[in-house]
Image: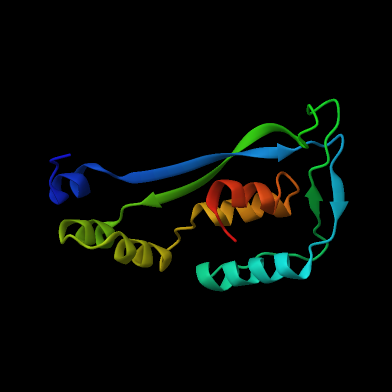
Length: 140
């Protein structure tokens, strides 16, 4: 775009990313326990992003389909978000031409949580499911 790294780092304070995911239809959703593969995936994400998800007493829901949701199993949408505040260390990386991987790794050392973390929290809250997250974020 022809904008210098300095100009970007001096004018941008916060970056927000979002995706819309479909919500499970509450009329026809089939409640079940997480299977072993799903638990392993969540544990892997915990390790990768240094977060802790509480799976105790949590269930997931399979999309079934009914008249209310037009037989899709989903009704309505909700956003999943990530927010990156640019502090001085991140701004310095940008000015120095660091790669996106370097910037992301530095952000993960702070309080940055990627989209998938918010998505998993919404799965654990019963709002959506891992299949829908995979459709939007390719997590498997």
